[in-house]
Image 1 (cartoon, one colour):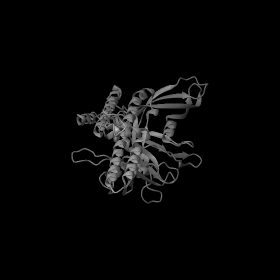
Image 2 (cartoon, rainbow, N blue to C red):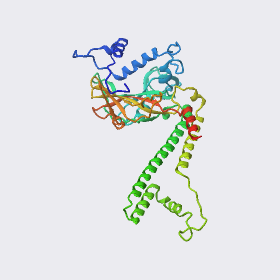
Image 3 (cartoon, rainbow, N blue to C red):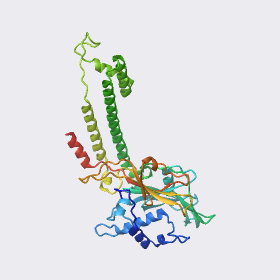
Image 4 (cartoon, rainbow, N blue to C red):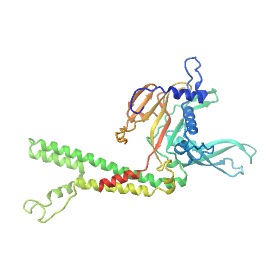
Length: 420
């Protein structure tokens, strides 16, 4: 599916799904085809079945949800939360109840003032529950506050757009616009203990990225300056004074006014006393572009090594978990329409780099596949950013995030060899 834009009918898969979960075999009320089902329910059912079937080393799925067992789904898709439930009424005498829970997706609850994914997730992590209070002898309101103690490598976020309306006795859809990031920083949802492990890693990753971006900008600026210089040199028919003005303007634009004086100094260094403004014997050396580029590469290598050195032993031991606190968006399931019982589902999947002959994977081009029934088209990332809802157009229902990885030891070794 990643190598072609041709549609592929997953008939065997759909039939197996309907056999395992009969609700997906329900016929539509008008007698034409099957009834539309909730995409989140289908997703959860599929993950549940994978959890049962994808055992490793002959192990069985633990009902307790041991996230470090040999079950593939538990390893890579299950997170854990630490929760505290407290009665909201001051007259209650019971102690707060602490618990640990396993989750396979984060919910994003939507209220009238919810504008961004992080707000909706925080609402879901601080939920209000009504249950019987033993100390009061009646129903009471409790607040269950949860924080993530383990982030999985793959984490779906579910926009809870469909809900049951008591007044109409029907399911309805929340149309509110809720934006989401292409890169999710999940550190704020974590326990204090996990935050202490993740924050140094997250911050160092951002520092490495900034340095890499500065290097890329410098390379682009150098190419642009070289092209302008070549164009200027090729236009020898222009008067000398005009060419000098263009060259001065180009240097000022590339370096800024603060360093213009330094360039002027560089040009006059070594000139004779009679031919220039500097004294005889004045010499200064300047680094070549290659030397500057090497220094920057060595700095980035040092920063990447420092990054790995700050990974806690506990995080390093759990390779199937998110070790950076950052997630990148890889797929989106959308729903089009205003009704909870009708409409149209599609999905967007970020393109991966094509496999090379040697088995390595090439760089990604940043584009996405849009799966619209049997129509598959290529779209820009800007299109995905428009799926925040707010009307009857396509709105995100499930987001699939993948952990931003730590730099591998192999890539660092290769970089060291290249600089040797």
